[in-house]
Image (cartoon, rainbow, N blue to C red):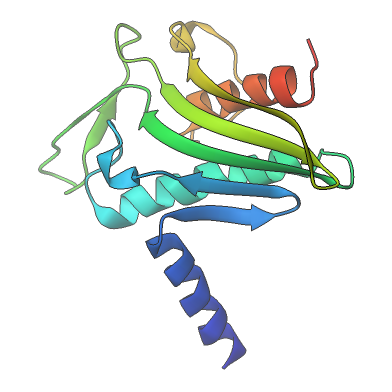
Length: 161
C-alpha cells in the first residue's frame, strides 16, 4: 500500500511540472510544454525532466547545511536535433556540433537559513559541446547538458573557478 501511494504521489508531482525537492534543492519547470526541444513522447519528456531535476538534486548535496537552492527552468534546447525514426518508433537525436548546441535558461535563488544570499537569471550554452571532454558516460543522453549545469553550479553557486 505504501509503495503505490508513493508512486502515485511521484506521478502527481511530475504531472504538475515540478522537478525535485530534496537536499536543499527545488527544481521547477516553467511551462515545460513550451520548451524548444524535448522529446515528443510524453514519457520521454518526463524522463528528461526527471533526469535533469535529479542531477540538480545530486549537485545540491554539496551545499552546506542550511543552504537551499531553487531553480526555475524556463527553456530547454537539448544538444543535437531529433529526426523521426520509423524502425524504433522513437526519434533519433543526431549531434553535428554545428548550430545544435545545448541551451538551458533558468532563474535561481540561493538562500541561507531563510535569507536570500544570491539570485539571478542565466542562459547556459555550450557551443563547442562535441569538442570537450566529459566525465559523463557516452550512454548518458544528457551528458552535454549535465556538464553545462555542473560548470554553472560550480562557478555560480559554489563560486569555484
